[in-house]
Length: 159
Image (cartoon, rainbow, N blue to C red; front, side):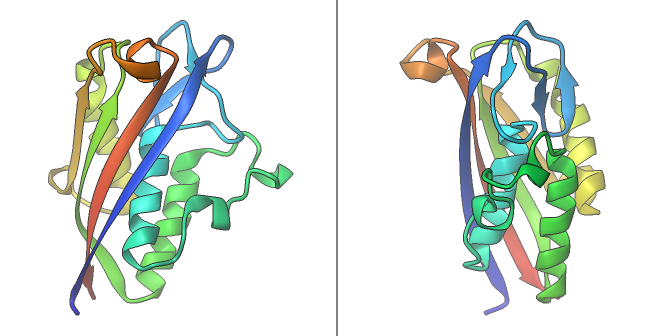
């Protein structure tokens, strides 16, 4: 088989006194995401999709939250490591598509910066990186601004 597809999902709680980082971009907001690393749900969902496409598990397997060395980790650096793991196994990303679900802040002004940052980290062109944003129409925990989640789909092609 010359193509593989993987999907990923991540969610983190919004809390005070934490930065809000999505797709490697720091976004001004009164709340940030709680997590062992920088809690970048978009980047985490992408990594899980990449790993899932090759049946390698999830990011918790490679970067366990129980290990102190990953505390505060920059998720873009972790993404680069996952990308190298994919390349080392003879695969590359054809494209990826994502959705970030957040009531606030409005993400449209930050979408291009996220696409550019992710593309650079993955050695792709921004045209290979889809980032969309939506709300949950005030439904469930995400809609009530208790957290932010992200969904990702990644297509891998054989080198």
